[in-house]
Amino acid sequence: MSPASDPATTSTPPRPGVSDSYFRNIFDAVKSVAIGMRVTLKYCFSKSVTIHYPYERLAFSPRYRGIHEFEADKCIACDQCAKACPVDCIYIDKSAPRKIDKATGKATGGELLRYAIDYQKCMFCALCTEPCPTVCIHMGKNHDLSSYSRQDMVVDFAQLDKEGLRTPLPLWAKKENGIEWVAKERQRILAGELATPEADIPAV
Ligand code: SF4
Ligand code: SF4
Image (cartoon, rainbow, N blue to C red; front, side):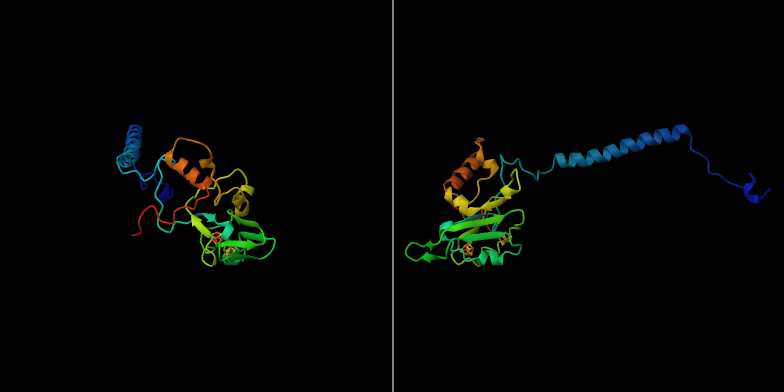
């Protein structure tokens, strides 16, 4: 008989009894539930970091960059914004050259046939607003452009201008829901007013 198989020389650790492992499992289960509940209770009594949107709304930070607002009557279709766009998501078409009439401050000449931005690609960098010679393209304050189709994500601001709008009316603002700020925002957009340039909270 080899030394390894000799029961006198091999030492096997004693196996815990069935009742030992049974009570240890119960102890471990209770302990892990207690640890989980401690974390849960800690968050129950700490300050909330979320809000009940849309009933509550966060204030916009300084230089917030939301969905564009566009003054089609000042656009001379010079393509400067489209050239500055790093993702090529601005599409402009005109029937003939346009220029600003100094007396009225409005663009005259050909018709602005298309001024579309593809929000599937836009990254809200605001680079398009920098070179605009007539300051007619602005970053707005709305951030929600949810839609039912990809086509709806391509917004033609020249078309919106025909409806008297400077920016698209978001889905959430289309229906009356009794929320005061939503009603005000709908009213502003339908009136063709630009968002106030000031931030809702002061710069630090
Ligand atoms: S915000 Fe940036 S990505 Fe969007 S259209 Fe303007 S330049 Fe292009
Ligand atoms: S840079 Fe300004 S004026 Fe020129 S096409 Fe763009 S929005 Fe219109």
